[in-house]
Image (cartoon, rainbow, N blue to C red; front, side):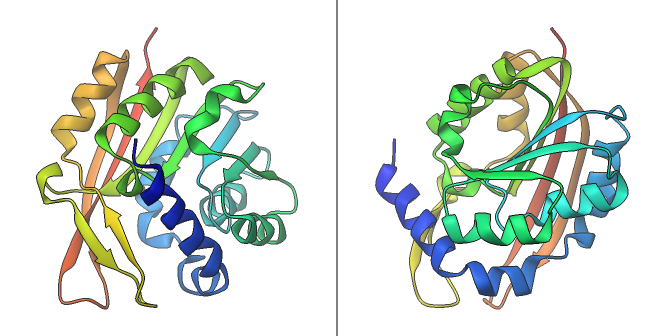
Length: 212
């Protein structure tokens, strides 16, 4: 388990919380996948927003469905402070995504927005297994990540010069892990994401339902 890289990512996001809030609060570019998620949720669904950042995904969901009950977790305290400001009707707390099994609650949906690039394949497998146990039968798991071959995972430089190891995942590999954990994929979408760097990333969105 690459705890050093995980801590680098947490420190980076804690440092960049203010700029992240300004640049990425809007998630309208991913609205199709979020509307697909919302179509699968009942009126009073309980949602866990993992690695919630400034609460940008929670904000989108609550703007559409204010009756949802949302708990957001993130290891960066500065991100949690922004999430609370952006979503006064939701709950947020500092908590490790790798320890969602320690949360007392269970959920109708778990959202994992662009966390997997900071997780090794082993951590992804462990997380999906833990997510299965925290979801009710029929519960929904939403995943967004960066798609490429895992072998192409590499150090990437942030806008402020810090380097963090970024992991890539192919849809086929994630779907295999999901199916091994009794999930059925019900939505799959890709789209290009342009960065300030010479290269562009392919974003991958998957929605899966717990079938047992």
